[in-house]
Image: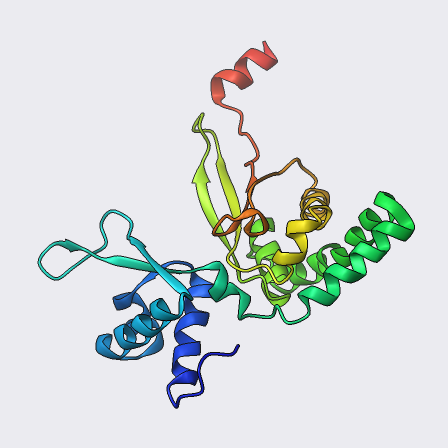
Length: 233
């Protein structure tokens, strides 16, 4: 990551990376997370704002500071994301363009499937290492190890029967390449569905301008007592 060359660079990089990994964050949350003073965090945020690396948003309802004034949450911009692990984007795009020109669409899809082979290769090992993890949490561990800064959000289903989950990737190391070659995102979604043994739905992607890659993993529906009675009667 290449911020300016001042002595504050390492700390500023920590602030930016914390936002990358944890998503939009308030100055107070960053200060607590990084063991910095609020004043120091605000100084670094001001510099990141000036550089165009972060942007300020209204924080979620319930996040306040001072005398009830709504706090601001700071999120990485596309410029801010560019500073993380994107140095080989141009080469990767050129290589995939060559693959597309010489091998066609099928060659690009095959490359995309091979690139995400790590999902299936590492899923079972992570699950066996920590049986307490849900399948979605296992995926988050697998993706995080590959630089995706992934986490799981638990959500109730609309019908109230069971729990759904969202796999959230705060960072995508191939976002710029995937913008031109969506086959990379498609192969990722297919691999997730395959290891889970159920249909999943990609709701948002960083490659297409969203703040986070989000994949909806429906919960296993439960059968109510009344339904069981109807089935057995």
